Image (tube, rainbow, N blue to C red; front, top):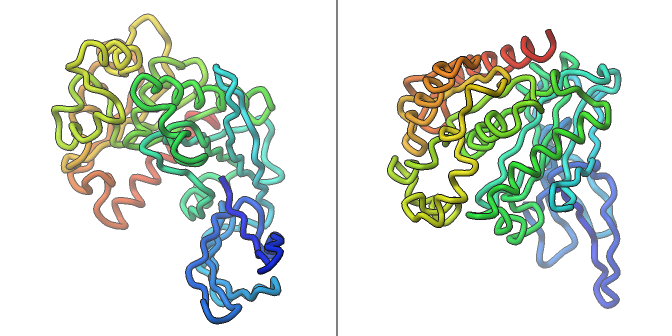
Length: 334
């Protein structure tokens, strides 16, 4: 899930790790001199803004320029853990928190789990300022459906394997509680788009594991997703709900069809955009209405601009970020 850079010596091709790069970072070689020993790389992490560095084949690294830091990361610690999913698969996840954070304490778990999209360590100044600096813990789950372990990590969770995405995420939630990092009442989760679908599944399938959820620009009605906007292009990922064999496994997790008035759900914030041209805002609208009709606590925000990003400019991004983090902190920190 994190990068490792090695120097290979021609001839024996002995490989040695390049020192000077912190653990749990995302590092990319952006340029290399094919006629010399010089290369340039970019490295960033949860607590480290992007840095451009110059290196040589003797292992020396020199920082050229760093992006600005937006929060104090001096006392931040990043740890990688592994949870065990229902089928015995080991699921990696990162935990980022201040060394003096409460244990257990309010924790935000994030995940995506689809389309072979890898979630790697990334610097997020808003998360750092509005969550970590306040004493909150952040966790990032590298669940199946992504590309963290290559194409097979993705294909295991396509179509009829889609239940593995939810099982992996729920396993990480359980592991966070088992390790004493948080409690179910203090654990929140957030996801957008395909990750919003994951939040819907957590809400209807695993409500007892969370104290609050934020569901951004989500797919939720999987019976009709392929009829709305870009939905038809995702049938290779989810299946065809008009095919009875496919609908059999899709219907088992589709959040809209699985709302129950007889189970207690955690508070959820639904966000969408009127002008989302990828995931139709109707998903969030009808899910909110159905949750209200079933007597569940739900908050709803629809921005009239922004497309699938949910916000069109810095002011809207700032408002939406403040809204989401304020909601989570109020629900989880009391």
